[in-house]
Length: 186
Image (cartoon, rainbow, N blue to C red; front, side, top):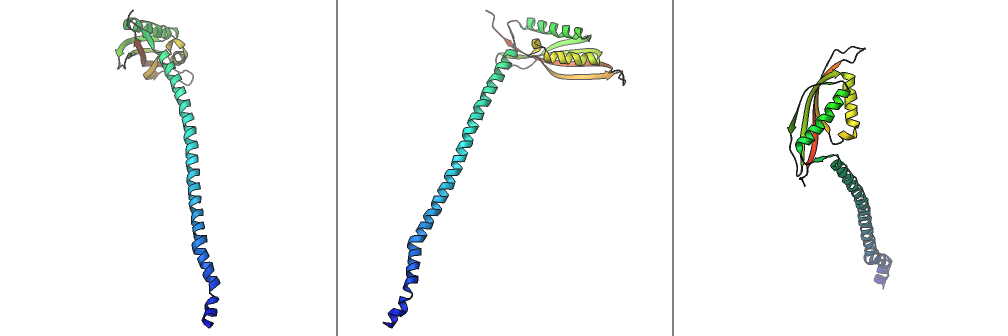
């Protein structure tokens, strides 16, 4: 009996330990699992939201690129005779040079690489005149809708007779790129 009373005072502690081992520990583990699952779900939800937003951005970029491609295609000069296209473009460029009092000294056409039905032509010209007139030419060339498909590929300038009061003279060589779509004759 004495032994039973000695061990009886340890029974509440043993009960608490059994309760902790078989009830509280499984509850704690379940809580941890639920917390991990919640964190994973929350992370996946944020990724899904980000991807959804990215999808909308990609759709917007696709729309913008489609508009740019259409704009680029409308800027491509089209025709059936490449010689006529070259002559018309050369005439327009030379007229613009004359209107700005730039003296053309040399010009020629070279063919560049093409892709599918679009060829690239280069009009290379050398001219001289006042620097201010050259700058006005560049501005009008860039803003003139009839030169929408044209692009200055390279330029070489030699400036002379510059003073603080006078901008000086320019000897320039330009290489102007022109994409051309050749259409078959009807």
